[in-house]
Image (cartoon, rainbow, N blue to C red; front, top):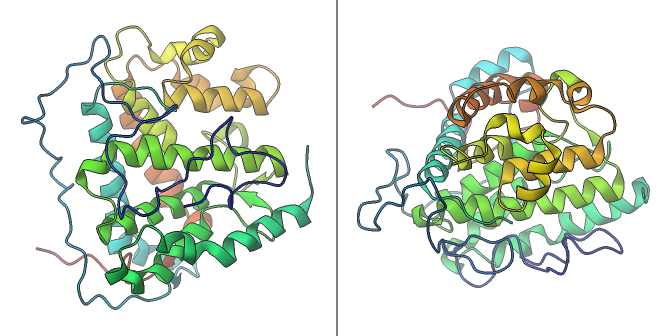
Length: 344
């Protein structure tokens, strides 16, 4: 998937890098990724045990799904129009699949040794950029989807287009981030991403998405969508805090209290997703951290990363997945249907 298409006018998406969000021509993203700030599985960091390759087992709900041979793909559409409709969402297969993906990736990160990670142009400029993505999204998705599943491309591409903000309001928030999680979930459903891609999904593909969105936020000064101000975790993101805290579980010296330490963040942000999030916040906001990011300041007092991780998962479900203002924009198709989960 060409990163140049996703590039704001006049600026590269990351320093010296033109890596794609999803590597074209492979049909899937490999679990071992080389390159600067990519996934490197050369060995465990201090304080983390490395499971032998033959011993590692997938988490209970991470079993691979065979690509659907006779799937009738459809263009996703909105189904949540009123607050009472949230009941359909909470019982839907879509939320079950998204939560399963969130938990599966979270456990794989926890079980894997820490690794290296990786002026306003105005409304018209962003809308021009967005229009280009809207026009090319299906072609981008087609580069990673096998030809025998070409019928899935229009459905999957909707989630990619929904994941980069709103071209009318010029805003971005956790609802758009959830759309990218849905995009990843769809790629898993049709077999483009597989069980052994779990770590690469987070530290290669999702991390690349974060870089793109941060560049957009800086370039176009996008408004936060549905921000709760100082009472929210972050104006724009949530998932990297969950997966980032999982990455730090059992770290030999970095504790939650260290992420409000400027020196610790500056020295370690390139290796840890959570600390990269903190650095970005401090670059975008001014004033004392405790004032502009009160929720995170409070979280820094939690004694362990495992408790931070568990608390953030509960918070994400309550503050994002169960909030009408966020979910009213979510779209449902054949891969992430509104139909209720069937028992058994």
